[in-house]
Image (tube, rainbow, N blue to C red; front, side):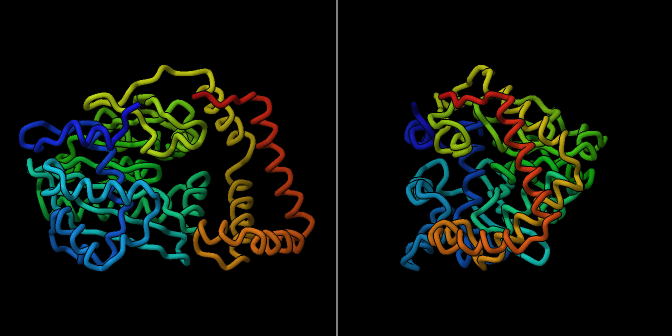
Length: 357
């Protein structure tokens, strides 16, 4: 059950000698989650090795979102394949008033191609709120920023581009590639969506989206939940994961053999999850989704926490605040919340979801 760590040990060869592949994509998609704040300054270009040395000199690994990142960072910095990749144009915006969490980084490979890596949802409450907003909103702020970012990079470098990301980052990669200027589209050679959600009909039916479909590579694990949200038109490849259920969203759990993911057959549970999500969204209107999500996050915001980690670390105290906030809702709003949750649980129950390895 090899993963990206095993791949790095096996394939430590320059990009000039061995071309880019789907596993490289996943590693570079993960790179956008790294704590480059204060390390990559504005438009300067530094190698991954230099970035790691700067991070070490500060005596900290920064605000790491996943424990495995701490192990991956030095391996990348010391490897033949990745150490001389240049990183630049790091952006990290969390703007609660706009309900926006957007982060991206540009990676210049030694073969002169560029990988634009969009970060998925971090652990900020506002980041999760923006994700939920995708279920009813025609356009979320990060999607607007993703287009502007891609066009800026394309105009600056003129290189061939690969665009990718994990989770929400995968959604942004497809959206930006679809709705960027025509001259930018001509530079794009591949688009990678690693277990990212799909789109509402307004995007799926748009001609600009359909123009880039053949360049999209979408990978989801067997019991994907995030990657099954909303609609997809592109071809989807199912990847084997060592985790179960929603934990398969973790890219470090994806199995690798050589320079490819271990492919899995479509399972009954993946169809069941897909149907459950689809049926739930059908039963709840966009307006109901918006009201439910806004109310849910108003309740969470009453705790004054900014991240999911803060929410869980003081769970008992926060739970009391959440219960009080819920009790202060008017009867009509309580009824709406109960009804929406009831429909979700009913849909899951009818689907008879079973977790498979």
